[in-house]
Structures are given as structure tokens and as C-alpha cells.
Amino acid sequence: MFHVKHPEDARGTITPHTSPGNADDTPLARELADLSARRRALASVSVSLPRRTRVITVSNQKGGVGKTTTTVNLAAALAAVGARVLVVDLDPQGNASTALGIPHSADIPSVYDVLIDEFPFADVVQTSPESDRLWCVPSTIHLAGAEIELVSQVAREHRLRRALTEYLETATEPPHVVLIDCPPSLGLLTINAFTAAEEVLIPIQCEYYALEGLSQLLSSVQMIQKHLNPQIRVSTILLTMYDGRTRLAQQVAEEVRSHFRDEVLGTVIPRSVRVSEAPSFGQTVIAYDGNSSGAVAYREAAVEMLARGDVNKGEDS
Image (tube, rainbow, N blue to C red; front, side, top):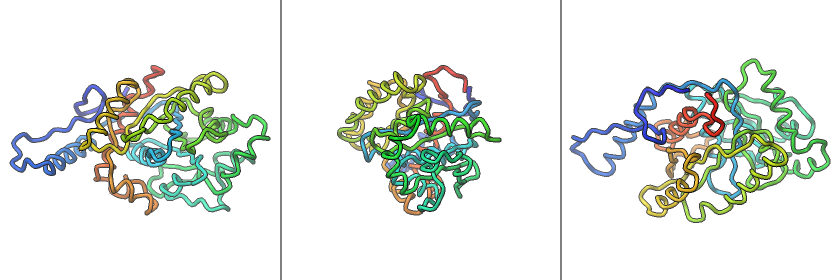
């Protein structure tokens, strides 16, 4: 298991230390002191990395919940603590590729070539300019037509899994974590992602209708378990776009925790201008502004994910 050199609360999040004697006791001062303490705690944290690659699909059939944002920022945060991370961009929009600074024009070998033409993963993996431990299998515009083309393919639901398995078995230094970014719909691309993974990470927006579509997603996971991939399960739920000043956000967080006590991370991702700005610069928030509240929160979430390991499977990661 992991050894963390700082106090933790019951949910495994980093507990900040603030000075009770701070004379400047305004809300902003308290917020800055808290953020500073969290940064110091992260600087001293010690983690151990998984002995076996964790393959995690990031999915939510409701749009606008921070799915791609969560994928790329968690990936960058995991790489920052020493993990080798591979992001598979399975969304035809290619936003994850953009955020990681990966070229993904129509002539670039991509995940489309893996799924349709059986290219090896090794031929399409690119290294992100942010870190030599952060890799990406990009998406291109061709992926938009892959749903139709996959219909006639042999073993159409297992093509990503077969390619990924071969890559992990032959790679000199396989990734510690694979994160698959899905489109916000249950088509053959998402089914390929579910079939290739053992874990599902669900980002949930802390706003009205937050749980909309979640029951459908859970039903989809159960269907995949029954027919295609018995190992897959929801291991992690991450609350995103959290605004602690609003009662609504607090109520949503309480409701999600009451329904999914074991899966929800203690860390929540706040609403952050820096998180929103970073993709337009072709960067994750970790590279764009690593000291911002959003970057700190994603780094805490990454540490918590590693520390928890795959708790639902009971493995000593």
C-alpha cells in the first residue's frame, strides 16, 4: 500500500494545517492560507505506484460534467508524482489530444487506425510535451465515422481491448495507469472503452440534475459486466465544478456521497478559471498554473486515487 507522509481525514484527502493566530482572518486570507498549506502537504507526500497497470474509463453520458478535463488533468497530476500515464482519446472531438499538446490532424496515425485498420498501439502513441511520462493515443476527425465502420468489423466490441493488451504485454515500460476518454454517448466507441477497462471513473458536476443519466450509465456498466467484461466496475466518482459558497453544490455532494459512499473521492474539484483557460493554450492546468486551486485539487485527487488503489477489488496496488 501507499505511505503518505501527512495527516489524512477519513476519506484520504490531505488535511491542511492553518495557523489559528492569523490576524488577517478574512475569507480570502483563510482561502489563501488553506491553499498554501495544501501545496506544502502535496510537496511532502510520498506514494507508491501500482505494480500492475490500472485501466480506467472516464465516462458520463451527461455532457458538460468535466469528463475530458478530468481525464487530462488527472493524467498530468499522476505523471507529476512519478506515474507513467497513457491517455486514450476515444472522443471524436479530440479535446483530450488538444489539451495534452498532441498533434491530431487528419493525417496523423490515431486511435481510429487502431480500431479499424488494426495498427499497433506502439505506432500511434505520442509523448505529451508536458512530461516524458505522459503519453497519448490521439483522436482525429476520422473517428467520427468509426461507429458506422465498426458495425461490420469482426469482434467489434473487443478491438480496443485486444490492441491495448498487446501493447501492455510488449511495452518495455508499460504505463502505471491508462485513462480512456469516452464520447458522451453509449455507442460502439464507449462499449470498446468499457470492454478494455477494469474500472470506471465517473465525474459528476455539482449542479442541478447532477445525477441525470447516472442510472443509465450504471445500467450500461451492468450490461457490459454481464455480456462483455465481467471485471469492469465503477471504482471512482469525482465531484467536479464545486462551488462551496452555494447550498446547491453542498446538497449535491451530500446526495452523491449518500448513494456512493465507497466510490466518491474525498477530494472535490472546484470551479476554476484556470482549469477552463488551460485547454485553449494546449495545456493541462497542471502545466498552465500548477499553483492554482484547480491544479492543487487535481493533484490531491491523483494522490487519493493512488492511495486508495483498487479498493473495490481488494488489491494491494
